[in-house]
Image (cartoon, rainbow, N blue to C red; front, side, top):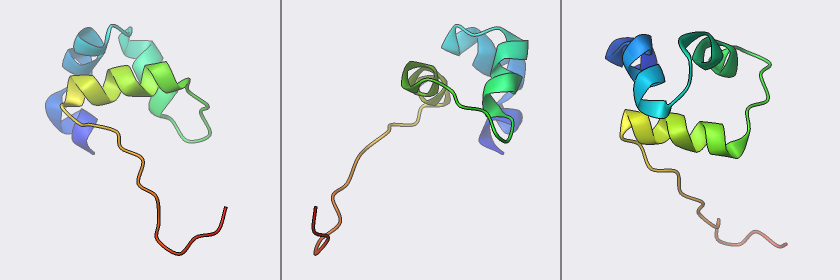
Length: 58
């Protein structure tokens, strides 16, 4: 995956998380906070966007 390719230690450093915390956050079944996800995505150079699907009734 992208985080492993960049180096987990580097992503942890850039996101402000400890390496163990990063691994726990990315493991299956984890329930990370949105702020944590945003920090990881920022460290990866990825932007989170919400897109409304056409023809979906709310």
